Image 1: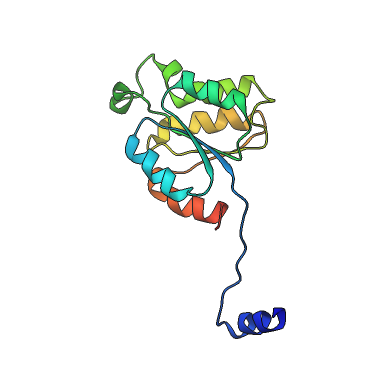
Image 2: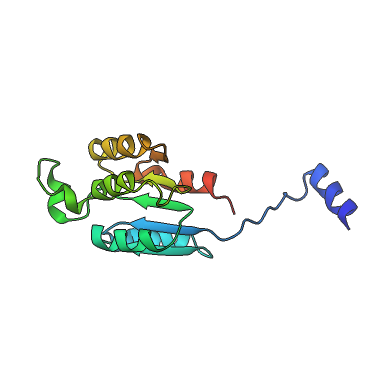
Length: 152
């Protein structure tokens, strides 16, 4: 049977298939449409969703995750401008908290997926200073990033 499969692969008749094990995914985002979007992308995986900084801290402190997705703007007034004094209720607060707790979520790949690039860069910088694997990906490009990182 293996010989036949290898022959089909060499002829290009079938594609190699590699199943990956389910992963643990964490999402911090206030948009319910994005919740559904992530549920579709990570069907078959364990997805935990938080909509607030307090909820995120509680979930992230309980168990390890393979992937962590952080949005910056979590409240309506965050969408208007970055000129506010409400950073304790943004994704930046989680970046800061993870930086202050270096033993938490050490192995996770962190992706800042906000559309707010001006706010994303300080989050990435803060997390990279503690040696974490983190990058910024604008939400419109996130589908491609997920497909490349966590192939099915």
